[in-house]
Amino acid sequence: MCGAELTSLPEGVQRVARLLQDKGHGHAPRMLDDAARTAQQAADALGIEVAQIAKSIVFRRKSDDAAVLVVTSGDKRVDEKKVEALVGKLGRADAEFVKSKTGFSIGGVSPFAHAVAPVMLIDRELFRFEEIWAAAGHPHAVVRLHPRELEGLTGAPVADVV
Image (cartoon, rainbow, N blue to C red; front, side):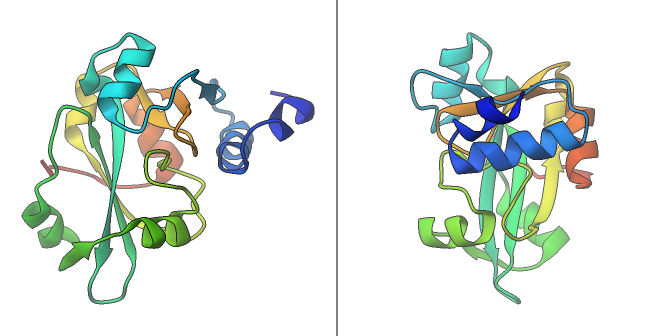
């Protein structure tokens, strides 16, 4: 992706694209015609299983107000008790909190290129697949990657959190 292509993208997608480019990732963010704010919308737009969508769920850690980002498979539900056992008591993260901590709006939260580095966990269920797709900084943007690439790009631990 060259500079001109990059600057035509929304700001959040530019951040993600730059990080991916800097890390030598083989795939640039892809802009979809329609919004993919949910895992099902993204899966439908890409013609894949909803389980192949790496959805980003953000919580607020009560002890220090840190963002806790859990990336899991689109067909799974995060078990807050399992996450709390790993990172401490959690609270709900509203849209303003998510935007201020990650730099992304709900529906487009990328697993990387955050405004403030979150506490992060990757659910092991994503490793069922050779290829997954994650939000890329905007509700219309996604990026293709392998679960091990997600782990490498984020440095996040893999855990059982569903």
